[in-house]
Length: 313
Image 1: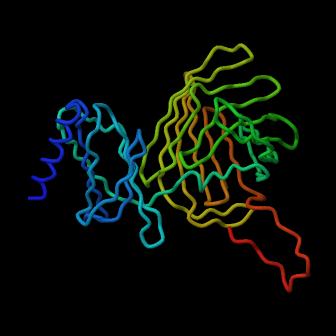
Image 2 (image 1 turned 30 degrees about the horizontal axis):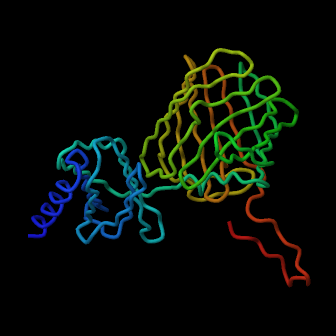
């Protein structure tokens, strides 16, 4: 009976408007193969939000013909769970597209890549090439902001000791994900066109892909860039800065022209990158976190405290 009422309402809506704008997405969300109620489902473009009912379902009616993305999230026993569906096709004229998604543990990049003015990280960096190994100290610090294409980016200054490869990166991490806009050094400035953007939500096992062009201000030919990443595991990682539990391990393949680089990153919540391994033919880069300073500045108390307090990460 409810299904008939729903279809009658939909038909009336279509008659009042245009049949071409009456596609429907029905989203079924499951957890451990059972319907999951109370799940937040976001439809893009548009940002329309629905919540699954007792049967684990929600509907997005009255959609124009096109392709849509679904982002699904729920906290379960204190752990973020999520699922994604990209490029869901919707046809016109009362066409119904059913999508079933299973929740898995997930991360939001905005909580694992906290690039903020004043935050800083120091790494031990080793470069192995042709049988030789070079060790450097790498420092990264958010030193300011700059508006690029209407977006406010954080300027990340990267320096080395001994000196070499000094540059600035222009990035933005927000609720919609992580975006890289530009890299600038004394020799060249590289603009990513369009900016290299990864969505915020990464469920376990999720694969993401971005494509853009690297435009060199120094006059070198433009280079196509393709990067594919996958969230493969939660792992504990021990580096000089300490042991970090439940780090998100992300694996990437980056292709620039005919060159391929394999990258593995371990990210700690509210800290950032704690370890990386990057490989390309004949060369390997490793980075391990030694020190870091994130979070609000520490205020000097007016009266002596009975003992020092360690801020929670």
